[in-house]
Image 1 (cartoon, rainbow, N blue to C red):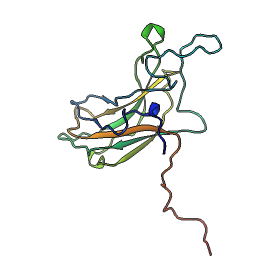
Image 2 (image 1 turned 45 degrees about the vertical axis):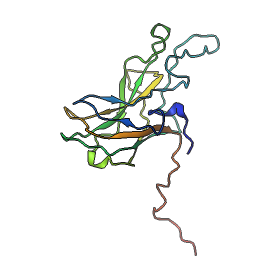
Image 3 (image 1 turned 60 degrees about the horizontal axis):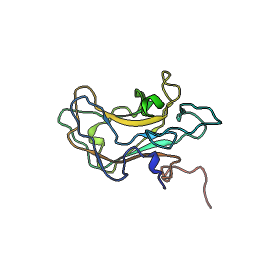
Image 4 (image 1 turned 90 degrees about the horizontal axis):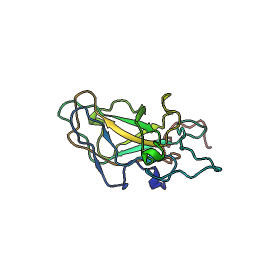
Amino acid sequence: MMIDSQLAFVSPSGAAQSMVGTDGTDIPFNNVVDLLGSGVGTAPANIIGTVSVFGEDPGIGQVKPDIQINVGTSFTTGNSATPEFIVQYAADQGLAGNYQPSTWYDAGGTGTNAVANLTAGTVIRMDIPPTPPVLHTPRFMRIVMRPTGSTHVTAGTISSAYITPARDDQAQRYAARNYVVA
């Protein structure tokens, strides 16, 4: 599978990002995905002469890409942490805000994950959620790891996380067939 570096939440891809933090603190992945594709701090081009702030909802449409998160180093915890991976969106602040993300809004997540299941090489998949009602046209997207309550992860890394336009794995390889070859 070819991966576009502009669709990666961990940059550079393959350089593990630590998920160790303090109790109850969100840990954002180190790269923000710009849905416009030009990068945080870049002004959008004028569209037919009209200056506007770009935004779109990537969680709707007929073809829905998904997100794949790859665990690098196994997670551990000393206080029963069950982290959740959450997609967040933010609007563009425009020229006055130097084209930076505004307030981040939670859009959807994986649900809590037992640390025992987050071993090296684990693949976590999730759909790209639609934007929350309070945010109509986001430009920026990121993922955060949120431990439950006042807990934290004592070890663990994410080796890569990216948007996949289509899954190319063989998840159905061993599924029962509805035909017989004679």
